[in-house]
Image (cartoon, rainbow, N blue to C red):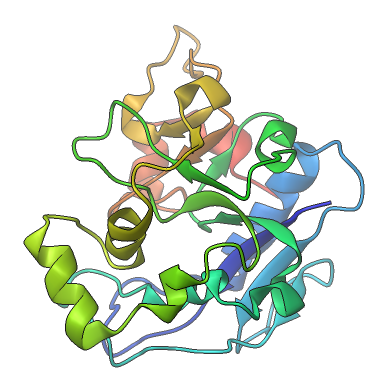
Length: 240
């Protein structure tokens, strides 16, 4: 059974306002538990700080940090290059032979078995609604070790100028898009992968679409009270 992999780190010097609390990971586990019916799945958290995480979350130590590599877009943007290690030749030893990589700030609203039971070695999140040709860094399926070039070829001094020159955005997302776009297989809205800004609600305040994994990019996160007040449906799903 493929695992679900999420990263957790603290970067108080650069990622101001982006401290992801243990509670958020515990809620992620609870949402997954409500929406996976296949047996023997695990949530694997790559972190150096396990304090406050529920015992059901399997924690492994970060193999790399790449803290010195900052976002192309300035200090206001997160640096997630360490997550590229998911593509390394050794990733399977810690993360499992197959896994769904996911962001902690997603909202799980429906059964996601279809995201886990894939036969391809890589499935990227692409969608015609994206404003540029990208593979989103916060959701993909990977058979460990099948695309080691994504990690092996990454060198900040040379890689980031290439990403910038071709107009790819984000940190790990930019390099993923540079290396793997277009992927042979994709997650789209047809699978239930949505951005929160793509959603509409019914008269009862619930979402109309058959969404399953909802990403909340940028500053608007499911734990923000202002975001919850604007979108009351959030608290129906984002909870323990």
